[in-house]
Length: 332
Image (cartoon, rainbow, N blue to C red; front, top):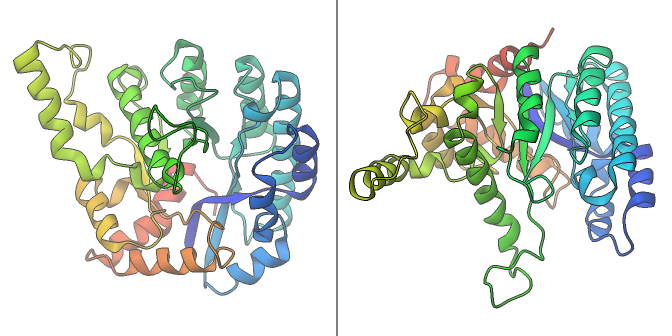
């Protein structure tokens, strides 16, 4: 079995409500309509059926509801999306073993309430949070109740990076060019969020909190030695005290995150992640369906990239399914 833990979807009724709520000239509409696999189950199932044993944990696709709607409407959209994903899990349990809750992160009271409803009533196996969240870092005090709640539930938080094209690559420009905002900006945003969660002491305060990072943790595995050396250097030469509230070495907290395989088919990249965190912290994910073949190319390449890793079959099985079963506490 291969359990894809980061598979995106835009359920049909939710998609229609999203278009109604979105501001004029909604920039993602053309992208969405060019990928029918996001909302058309026939398209999705035709792709999935090409891969034996493939199952998908459903996560709501961009945009974050809090980016396009006020607090009241965002709560309504979250509820609609979660209800519709729950229906899909119930109707197609052989395809979708679980779903991840969308939360209205511009109203933390509403977000906490929806997390409870999704997990207790809809049987969801975690929640998704975008970073940054309305241009805010994830280590702000207002988000602490969510971390406390998810640690108590013993279920993961998926963090998905987000950066728009109007985030320029240089201060002298007004927009990003050549897809730099997504190709490199998104892994950077993941790295920033992880670093803030580490040095703010959130993983110290909530040591059992499960956090799943997208795109194999962004830049973290590749820069392991730089992370270690730079903070040691800052402490020794400049007297910086970034580590003063941490009981362990900073790099040990980075290894507490889960790292998915959604780097589009790079075995060397996955081996770098494996060298950093070990098979126990890696989860199979494809970023379905964001490619030119409606999800087939990245799915195929990601499966092959895991199969080609120079690790044992036991460890490959951990990445493909065992770790997901354990982290999400799946009943399958």
